[in-house]
Image 1 (cartoon, rainbow, N blue to C red):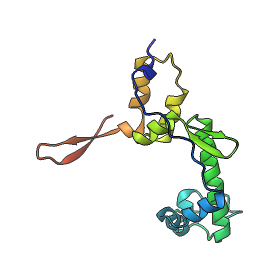
Image 2 (cartoon, rainbow, N blue to C red):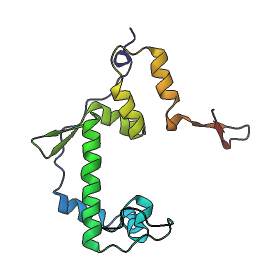
Image 3 (tube, rainbow, N blue to C red):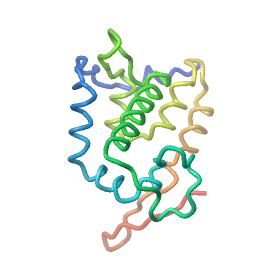
Length: 161
C-alpha cells in the first residue's frame, strides 16, 4: 500500500492562535475590499435581504441590506466556513473558541490548494493507491490549467482536458 504521508515533508503546524472576538473580526472585515464589494452587490456573493430567499432576478444589484443585516449575514458566513473547515478536518476547535490549524491547513496555505481539493484529499484513507491519489489531484481545479513558458519567455495558458 502506498502512504503519501511518508513522502510529504511539511513544517510543524504553528501554535494555536486566539482569534479576536467576532465583533472585532467584523470590524476588521469592514475595512477590506471584500466588504466594499459585498456592499455594492451582495447577491453576487449569495447574500440576500431577509424574506427574498435568494430569488432576486439578475445578478447586478440585489436587494438593499442595512449595515446590521449585512454584518449578521457575514457573521453567519464566517461561522459556516469555520464549521466547514472543522468538519473537513483542516482546522480544529480547542476549548470551543480557539481555532487551531492542523497540518492540512498549513499545506493548503503553503501550496495554494482550494478547500474542495483539500477536503477531498483529507477524506482519502492511508491505504489509497498512487493511481487513486493522482486521479483526485488531476481532477482538481488548481491543476486544470498549467502555465507554460513559451520560446520568448512569455507565459501562455494551456488547458489539460
